[in-house]
Amino acid sequence: MNDKVLIIVANSSLEVESMFTSGAVSTLDKYGIDYDSVTAPQIVGVPSVLGIVLDSFEYDGVIILGAIMRQSDDGTGPVNDMYNLEYLECVRGVNDLAMHFTLPVGFGIVNITPCSDGLLRKIMEVAAKATESCIELIKIKQLHQAYNATDSGQYKHN
Image 1 (cartoon, rainbow, N blue to C red):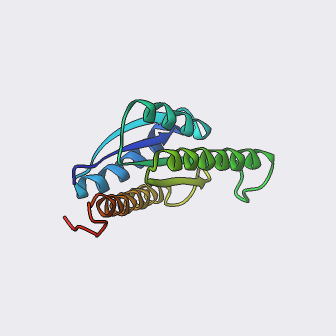
Image 2: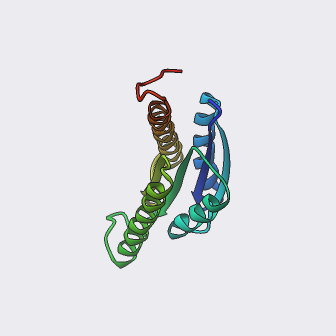
Image 3: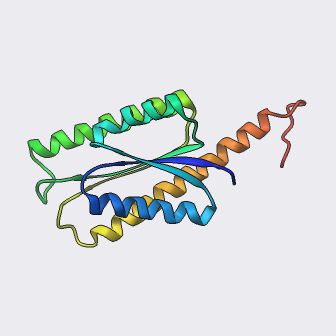
C-alpha cells in the first residue's frame, strides 16, 4: 500500500495524546501505511483543523482521536452536557468534510473519567480500532475507484 493518512489527536493531556498516537501508529506500521499527525487544540477544533489541512494536502484517509474527560462518574450534569454537545459538533463537522472530500474516516473519540480503570489500555484499543476502520474504508474506496476506472465499465482487478 502506498497510502497516506492523517492522524488528528484532540489535545487533552500529553500522556493521553501520546497513547492515542502510539496505538494508531503501531497499527499503521503493521500495514505499511505512511501518516502525518497533527494536534487539534480541543474536540470542537478537530473539524477546523481537518478542513485547513485538506485545503492544502491530499490524504487517503483520516483518523480522528481524542478523549472527553467527564467530570463525574455518573456522566450527568451541565458540564457533561457541554462535552456531549462538543462531541456531536465534532462528529457533524468531520462527517461533513468526509462527505465533501470522499474521505474514509476512522473515528476514535472516547468519553472517560480521569481515574478510569485501564484508561491507557482502552485508549490504545480505541486508536487501533479507529485506524483499522480507516484502513478498511480506504480499501473499499480503492475498490470503487478501480471499478469505475475501467473503460468497459467491467471490474478490473489489479
